Image (tube, rainbow, N blue to C red; front, side, top):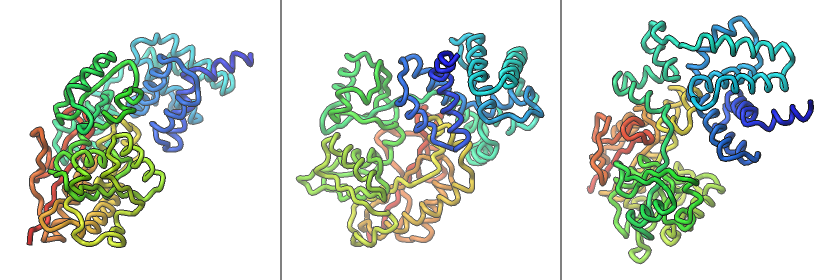
Amino acid sequence: MNNQNEEVKQSVRYLALTTLDKIIQSNAYSNIQLNQALQQTILSAADKRLLTNIVYGVIQHRLTLEYWLNPFIKGKKLDSWVKTLLIMSLYQYRYLDRVPNWAVTDEAIKIAKVIGHAGIRKLVTAVLHTALRNNEIDFAKIEDPIKRMSIEYSVPQWLIDELNRQYGLEATRAVLTSINNAPHQSIRINRKLTTVAQVKELLTDQQFDVRQSPVLPDSLIVSGPISVADTDLFQQGLITIQDESATLAVDSMALVPSSQVLDACAAPGGKTVQIAQDLDAHASGKVTALDIHPHKIKLINQVAQRMSVSDVVEAVKLDARKVDEKYADEAFDRILVDAPCSGFGLIRRKPEIRYDKSLADSLNLQKIQLSILNAVAPKVKKGGIITYSTCTILQQENDQVVTQFIQSHPDFSIIPTETTNQLPSHSQQATLTILPSDFNSDGFFVATIKKSDK
């Protein structure tokens, strides 16, 4: 019996249950919990894929699954793990075609037997059999259109309301559809060391599927037999992993080899090294990268070394709001403020964000974002540029922040954000907003703010 129990506890579904319960009950980050689970157990490649699929899938579709489950558990007080086990099983019934329903049910009953008592096992058995008999979810029965979309796409009503108000119903529906699709992986090539053509050829030789990104000429969308981080190209700094949308802030900065650049919120260093690739130490070009955490400064230095740009990168432990303590006014030609934000553009990669964040969070972040802009503003030279970017799609943290900054700084103005590839924007102003539905990349915002020459 003990051997059977141990076998169940080593199973991929038991691991999925314990991982999900931590995420749901403790508001833990899904990517961190999943990585811990993958590192602490020995799983086959197929089981790793199944674990990842179940964990992310359940979080993505949680509201839909709860709507399906609720009629079958009405009036019952359940421990959190029991509800998670049921939801996890419903996810597999509905979204995983290759797993037979009987296998899902059998595994769930075994897990219930190991963790709970006989009554729990019977309840799980009965609920799952009832759910299989009633497996059609009729969204049309939900009269309120916003609530219907909330259940159908598993996104809180307040966020749908906000997106609808800001972008309209058609764009909102496109965003909601796209964020439950699996994210693709994109890489950016290091122009200091290689070319797009060389990287394409080398990755294709290693059985990777490679296609050009429509967002940036230096970006490629890849999928292959191993993680791209395990390739020699990555280890040698010829490429780095970076979502296409995230490359646009630096792409728009119009850097020259001698530019003096401040990356005010730099960790983990992806944009720092992208800036560094356009600079030349012989021309005295330099990027100063700030972060408040020592371990993140170490991370920035490591990525700069891997990408062979350490000669133009200086990582400094400093809160961007305290730049006045260390740097003279008008010390920089360009300043990048890749501001802390709610991250709603990353929902595809961090699905729990949709449940954990609120509109109040966005408004609180707005104050921090403005305080960083206010602090760095005197440090840019006359005629210089502050590039403000976020990985959220809510205007409260984007256009509204930039507008408030301009209103209190008459010597600055918004100028059009120009990128290498001309891209459509959802912004009302000359700023750039990329929605997750545009290119199946992350949602992102970039504003270009110029200081007067006078």
